[in-house]
Length: 222
Image 1 (tube, rainbow, N blue to C red):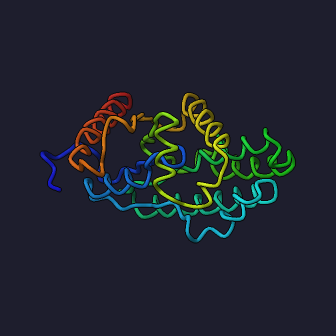
Image 2: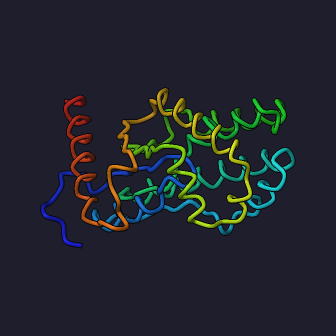
Image 3: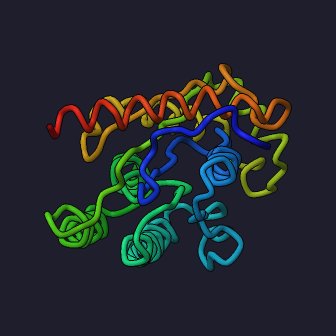
């Protein structure tokens, strides 16, 4: 689609999309990529060697899955910035430690030793002044019933077979996580306020909000 106007969003910006499973990160990533003519960085699900095993046995595979995600996301983050930016990124590296690994150790599906090892690696790799943080994190939020409905519609067997209590806990943890997140500026979008599938033009309202965030950030630096 042709945009109604040009938006004052840096061409070298790196924008990360965050939110729980089923909230529409990939749809948002692709829509913004097309609108801004940015490249995409998509979460690798099909090629993940641990994901299906993890859903069948959290205790056995949680540590392996988190280490795999950490390595892959770190490599991808470096690639994006070495390329010079201009990317929309599906899911952030921060969610892994702030939500998933933390949830597993607290629920007993990851040992404390494994968690400490994972957290030590994360801090050494990501929580340093040398790590290239994104320019903006867009957080997609919505009600739990809406998100569960999207998971069912997506139809991935390993997700549909997962107990609802797991998704309930994840939803709650995401809300707590985003309220404490401060690694980069955040734009919160409610999934009920737009429909990028039925109304692709609704991306323009989102672009206006992104533009405003960058203007605010520019003022703070001035």
